[in-house]
Image: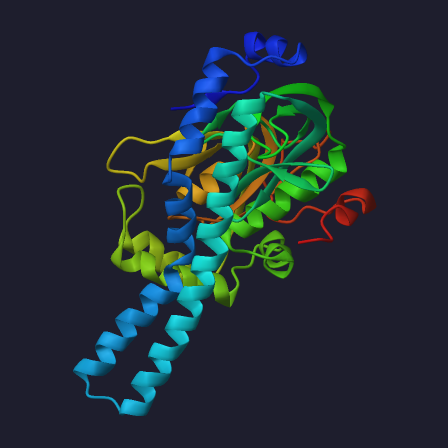
Length: 316
């Protein structure tokens, strides 16, 4: 269930130092559920799961005993570390949240959203706050005054204070998009010249056996041989797609680009973007936010940036 943290009723109550019944119930559910812990543990469990699969393969192939035991030892160490990084902090957060519900004290501080660990987090004064699952209407290009429970940092509501600096917003958004889509500064520079990098070609190869309803195998093969990208500019929006397409997509201008669920959460709606994609199959390979003053009339793959714009991208 999505939660609107900017709801005026809840915000007004928090400004008076009070909790609404809906906020109290939301915090109680958060204190009782272990879903957040499970999601975090599953994100960290990729390496142990891969190790177990490799171990099973080695046993089938009758690999040397020494190799098998080394793999078992490494897997146990990593698994124990992941357990300690996941379970105790989650239990501690639950205990703090229960104490907050008994005391019902509120604090407030200004902050913003930062993209980290596959999603946006609320950060204020160097502290990471606890957002409810599926928060609605929060944007990383805005500054907020968060009202939260002091011990656990559980966010109850968010009041818009103003817009973040344009250069900072674009740099942070570009960092989030690059992490979600798997490209870096050098890759983006090559895409601006209309070139497809070797790394991107390797990432596109699995699409040969997973061709969807939005492009054909012939189109994809032609793009891999041609080794080029095109650019499309326009206002960006997130969009849900019907079958047979993949469920998540970016709508840039008049074009749809299928993306992963992680990339879907990274985009900020209603801002101008330049999307780099394969010419015929239309697969998105990278994307960058544009300055608000930028002219969206051109769709060339190579666009010079001024000094201010280039400086904001130095962190990618």
